Length: 392
Ligand SMILES: Cc1ncc(COP(=O)(O)O)c(C=O)c1O
Image 1 (cartoon, rainbow, N blue to C red):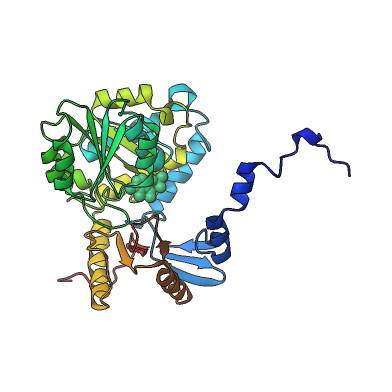
Image 2: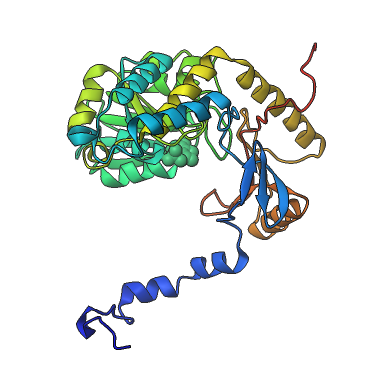
């Protein structure tokens, strides 16, 4: 059959960008080794089906194991029936619904801030938390190990950037001392570092910025639901809520949904609603996403046993890893890496575990610092306890 495409509309096979993509070594290696994008045929709690085998999921972000909680599933179904599949537009335009406001009020109150805005992805929320509040002429001071979403926000801002050593307040202080006090500055950190499992040294990081005109952005994707006596996150756990201007995070970890949030004072959130590109030009979070997050937030507050079990399992699991003399990068949280040091070793161990029925995610340099190639283990909260809790 004769091509319906006019010759000049056919893609040019020789254009440089297409060729660069075709010849990309990383993509070729990824397709050859099939380490990522494994596709599961089924899932039940912490078990997933892959190529006819049942695997134990050890690298999920479902920290509290709520993604198949009956109340979460029911809330999602009811929202779908009541509101349909999508908001089909941005909040600013046709996309706002009453459930958005309910979720935002509940999230703001939970993390201890006045107001909140929800986004359809945690990545968008965290990127927006940085790009919206920083401007040309500002200085962004960022922990060198923060998540890609925050780097994307930095990339979009026109501010100058300085990295400080990972979780190192004295390095931050040294940089601050070399800058004019009155210069507007944004300090960007995570609450719990997702690869390392480290908790931010927030009190000291806030202290060194005092008197230096610093605005603090905390990405608490991995602290939310995990740290604090109510699971309210890193800032609450460290009694630093007032010291940080913005708390952003994800709904896809402890809240077992998809989406993200940015919380802060009312004036800041109204400013974000006026200026954030990710908010103004992107469709609002769907009814099902919002309903599932809201139901999970209810459960998180009413049923602390999920968080307590997560910590019991984490402690037990770390003890086992210590007995095996494995390097867990001094993780202090349920984000527990196993450092294996180089990519060949990481690949062998990853494959071995897979053959034994254990699914983990491989993180290799440059995604992690050189020599820190690792297997990520997290969210270890199946709906059962790995061993009886102490005293039970
Ligand atoms: C620290 C951190 N921030 C932001 C995100 C983005 O969240 P989401 O995956 O919900 O888009 C992630 C996701 O892994 C994360 O680890």
